[in-house]
Length: 137
Image (cartoon, rainbow, N blue to C red; front, side):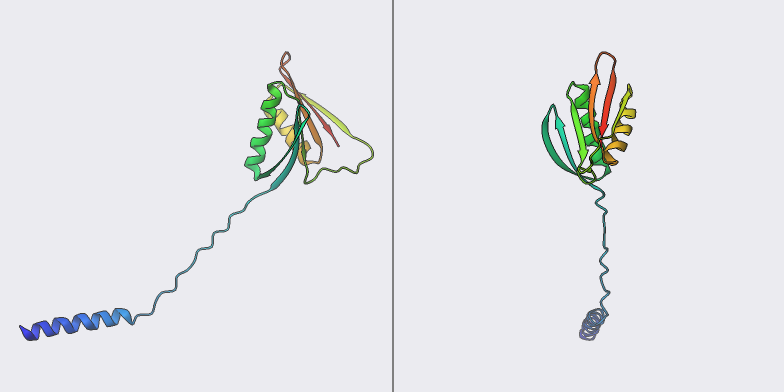
């Protein structure tokens, strides 16, 4: 019995030492890089009250512009300019107008014009159910 106990104890000690002497596997840190996306610094006004907001990513920009169209639909006059690309030193003003009964068409046009450096003013005619958009550069 004494021999069996010694043998088991010796095997246990040698096993523990063998495990303790093994080379440790290096831990690989997984680097996760997330793209923040485009940053928009937007200056906008609602019925003449000026505001500024910073939006991060396409989803935030899309939600913001849809919100502006919804405000126009409620009767507000909304103006939007992307401060990152708007040009203030232009001597002559270029004015482009657009009207649409479709909110998605008005959204697409406003998106294109604001990202092209225009300041876009949006109103909604409740009687005709038409979005009236004016872009000024």
